[in-house]
Structure formats: C-alpha cells, structure tokens
Length: 133
Image: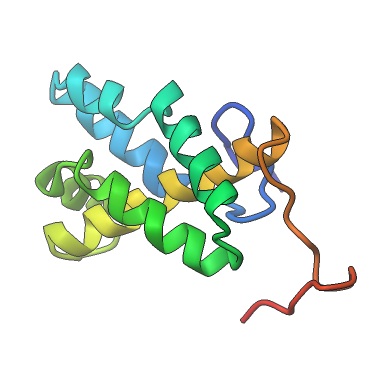
C-alpha cells in the first residue's frame, strides 16, 4: 500500500491523508491561481497564532482544530475547493469544500507545531489523554 502524501512536517498523527489539500493545490495550479497555492501554505504568522493559542490554554485538539479551521477558511477559495474535491469524486458545495480543505490546513499546522515543539499531543494511552471519536 502506498504511503499517503503529506506536506512538510506533517506526521499523520491528526490527519492520515492530505488528499483534499493536495487536490486543492493541483486545482489551483492548473487554474493558474498561484496566489491560492501561496495562501494555503503555512506561514510564520500561522505558527505564531498557534503558539498564542497554546499559551492561552486551548486544551482540546478539537477546540484547537476548530479555531484554526475558521482562521484558514478565509484563505481557501470555495469554488477552487469544490472543483478540487470533485477530482476526488466528492460532490460538495463550495463552503463545505472550503471547510474540508481548511480543516486539513489546521491539522497540518497542529502536526507541524508538534514537530517543532510548539505543542505536544497526548495519546489516548498517556495520562490525561483521551480517546478520539
């Protein structure tokens, strides 16, 4: 089985597959919209925002992902996202597609943040960890 594609510093600890994000980048590039690609990359400001959220005491992974997803939704173009997910056989509206792409951006930031020591995710078997789902 092929290893899932992951963006730099993504570990797969939050999202196993980044297919939505890769499809979005491919759709944006093929449309000639390099600005959309750039806007959907992690920036220093994103890491600074993550650091602030962690320092402010955002405790649950779901709360952190929800907050970051809302931040990223403004940077995802709904029409591109809908076409991108269509490439994967999903027929969803632009807003829902943008939310799904933004959610993968949020997960990527959390995983990269863990890689760089900004936060540490507790696993369900660790003290204080919770079972997902």
